[in-house]
Image 1 (cartoon, rainbow, N blue to C red):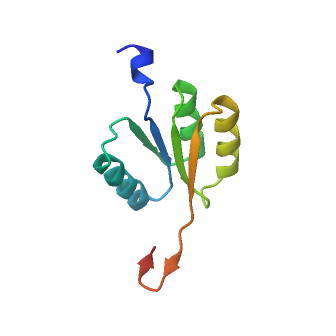
Image 2: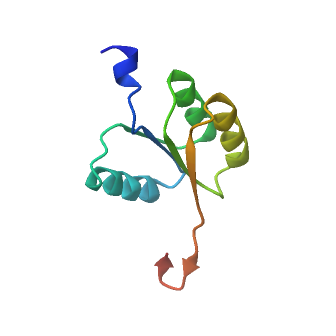
Length: 96
């Protein structure tokens, strides 16, 4: 597979230390019809993925250690990248 084909539009990078959150987002992304996405646990893993090729969207959690460094670095390397920063809110019976 050529690098250009591998780095096609619609690439999504999910960075979250919580397994349940990565699994949930993976399901949602697949339901929306996106096939080119990557799930990682840590900012260093995310930065390594961004070295390989750009992502159109980066989804991360504000509680992720060094998430601000991730956002700044991704924006410098790939200015067209969009971001979703999640804010988890704990309810009595779970997350929202």
